[in-house]
Every structure is written in C-alpha cells, then in structure tokens.
Image 1 (cartoon, protein in one colour):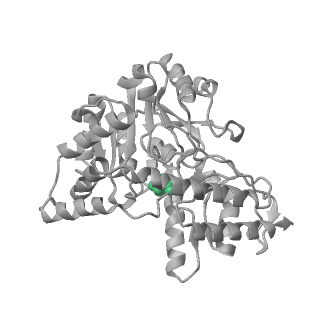
Image 2 (tube, protein in one colour; image 1 turned 60 degrees about the horizontal axis):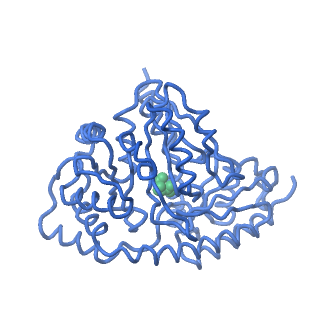
Image 3 (cartoon, protein in one colour; image 1 turned 120 degrees about the horizontal axis):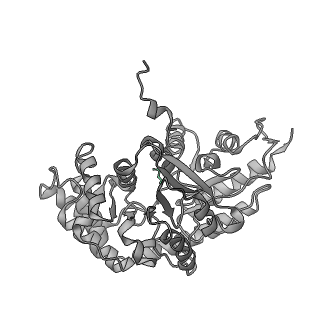
Length: 402
Ligand code: GLU
C-alpha cells in the first residue's frame, strides 16, 4: 500500500511558489538573479498597518480568535464591500482565512463531491485546478485566446456547462495575464449563468485595486444581483496593501456556505493569525489614497515591460488592463537553440534556460494552462525591470536554428 495519498498524486506542486523558491536559493548561493516570478508587490506594508499590528501585540491580542475572523475585522470587510463594490453583506456572511488561497481552498473542499465539475478559464492561476483535484472534483478548462484579450466568451462558458458543473471560477483582473473583464463582458457571462441556476460563481477579486488606463473593476454579484445567492466574492489584503506575508484573505457569500467553510477551518488552521487580523482592519479602514498612487507606478512599469518585451526577438506581448503581470507569447522562440546550447522545445525549457543562462526567473506558461508563453510579474523596481528585459532580449537574440 502506498504511503502517500492517491489524491496527492493527482496534483503538482505550485509552480509560482517553486520559481520564487528557486530564485531565493540561487540568490542565497551568490548568483545574480532577478526574480520576476513571485506575484507580490515590492512595496512595503504601509506604516499605519504595521503600527496597528505592533499595537495588537502590545495589547496582548496574541491568542486564539473566532474561527473565521474577529468581529471588528468582519465589520471592516462588510464596510469595504459596501464602499468599493456596492455589495451589502452581514458579518455572518463573511469568512476570513490565512490568505485568499485558504479561502478558495476552504470553499472548494467544503462543496465538492466526486464528479463535480469546476469551470476554470485558462490561462489560470496555477492553484485553481489542483485545488479542485484535491477536492475530488474535475477541472473543466476553457481556453481564453490571446486574440480575445485572454477573455473567455459567453459562448465558451455556455458550452462548458454540464449538469455536473458546480462552480465557475472567475478572476478579473486575472493572474497570469492581467486581463480584465469590463462591465459589459461580465454581464454577458452572468447572463449565461442566469440560465443555469445550479452553477455557483467564485469570483477571485484579489487584483481589484490594480487597474489601469480607465479600466473599471466590477464583480459578478454587483453586476447581476440575481446571482448574489450563489456567488462567493473573494478578496484579500495581500496584493493591494502589500501584505502577502501577513496571510489574510476573506470572502463573502451565503451564510450556509460560510458556515461550512468555518467548520472546515476549525479542523485545520483554527483561525487566521490574530495580529494579522488587527493589521487588516487598519488596512481596510485606514487611508486608501495610496492605492491610486501605487497604480500609477504599476502602470508605468507595465508600459515599460510591454515595450521592452515586444522588442525581444520572437516575443509578442499584449498590454493588459490590470494586476501586475504580463503574459508574452514566445511562439517565435520555440524549436530554436539557446546560446548556452539548450533546445527550446517548450516554454518550460525557455524559462529554465533563461534562468540558467541570464539569471532571470519567470514562470513558464504550461503551469497556467496556455503555451507557449511565460509570466512576468513586474512588481519590482524600474531598474530591475530594465535590466531583466535587457537580459531577456539578449537571451532571445542568442536563439538560433539548431
Ligand atoms: N498568487 C501569487 C502568484 O501567482 C503568489 C504565489 C502563489 O500562491 O501562487 O505568484
């Protein structure tokens, strides 16, 4: 009998986490590596948030808390949903976990039964399909084509729905493409969902505050109120407030779903970190004006990276609406051989050789379900981005026919 669980054999380790880890190890070993792998802002956590955490420690807020979040944080989350999204939720409809990742995980584990299907647009964040598999469900991948701005169409969604569909996972602005769905795009998708009352929506809004050039964020439960009773609206403080390490994610949805997620959490992590919860209250209730200032910085970086990558031989890069990722296509590089002698058969070989030969860490497209591409996280300084793009251009110019 095998020691490890059979379920685990159906999933892969997270590629985003693996690349980040690998870049850290190479740096620790003295290599000059520029990390464009990790999806985390390089900004520091705001001072008022840090101060709230220190005050919480000093006030002895260091014990177990309510399983799915302290009442003050749930209040702050309800106020955030009202303020930013025009969505009314009561505290009993809110769940707080150790990062958006645990929120999604809890929701899937609490609801999936064998043979349940979950519709996931590709390119997708690496963890969605594997979490579905861990829950015994089946990911149904719907490919969003680059020609369509990496957005799926209502026809694509309609065609993927079966009587076994439990969830549709929606993510805008998206990881790894940065693609955003405007209000009309969202409405067209919610219109499809209205015709299929058994399908629930999991909207991962983690990049809500990272949008550029007049793109306006919207979320399904707000666009189509008739879906409110079957939507889980997921968000967190990691990306907007530069708080990835604090691990606070949250969601709001129907009370019976929230109760099921709470039951699961009570048997795993008990509660999210008490200190981080107090910090998150300050993040959500404190000043919000720096969010737009940071967006301006990110937009400039996006423009820099898109321009520089389009100048690389064999690479084409779209300009996305949000997040801090771009997802260039490298079809012009496949089948060639690098200056260091590696044959670039696929995007994984491209990313591996780029790291080995030029010291730039990116995540290969196959991990996100659409090849041949790679993901760049441009949440790093202009100087680092300029240098990284120069290295990528050098790497691509060195590619030659075998
Ligand atoms: N969501 C981020 C990323 O895509 C963080 C790492 C992870 O959990 O995947 O890089």
